Structure formats: C-alpha cells, structure tokens
Amino acid sequence: MNIKPLADRVVIKMLEAEETTKSGIILAGSAKEKPQVAEIMAVGPGGVVDGKEVKMEVKVGDKVMIQKYAGTEVKLDGIEYMILRQSDILAIVDDKKKGKK
Image (cartoon, rainbow, N blue to C red; front, side, top):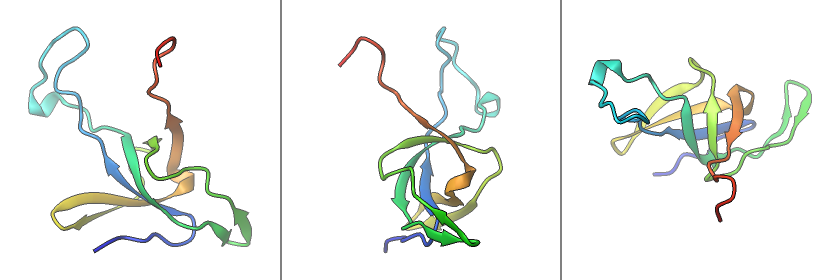
C-alpha cells in the first residue's frame, strides 16, 4: 500500500537519532533527543490551498528539518511515517560537505 498526499501535504520518515556524540560519547536511550530531521517519501501536487496558490518546494528524497510538534503520525506496514503540510517544513538539509564531491 502507498500513501499519496493531497494538496500541500508531504509524507516523511523521521531519521534515526545519533547514538553517539561527535566526541564519541555513547548516549543512553533516554538521553537521545527526538530528531527533527526527516526524509521526504511522497509529495502532494500543491495547487490552490485556502485560496492561495501553493508551489511545492520539496521533492522525494530531500532531507528536511521540521517543526517539533508538526504533522500526524501514521503507521503503514509496520513503518512509522508522518504527514504534514509543506509550511511545517523549516528547511531543506544539504548534507554535502564543502570541498568534497
């Protein structure tokens, strides 16, 4: 089964929290902060929403930062997804490092 979002909604899958810090400290389960970075799995068509034209700025595969309490959680085939409006996305994350190809 696939999820096809409508209007200005997107389907995302949250990325796993880091288990260790950059300095090598291993975090206990309760010390991990809920990640706010996710991967776009599906994108709605955009169009007119609440009387305003909405152009979709994200695409499938983009990594994005979202608002902390945004969206609706859904579970499909044992996998947890979140459906939210494009306006709940704060930024697209560019994980390419400078100077590397």
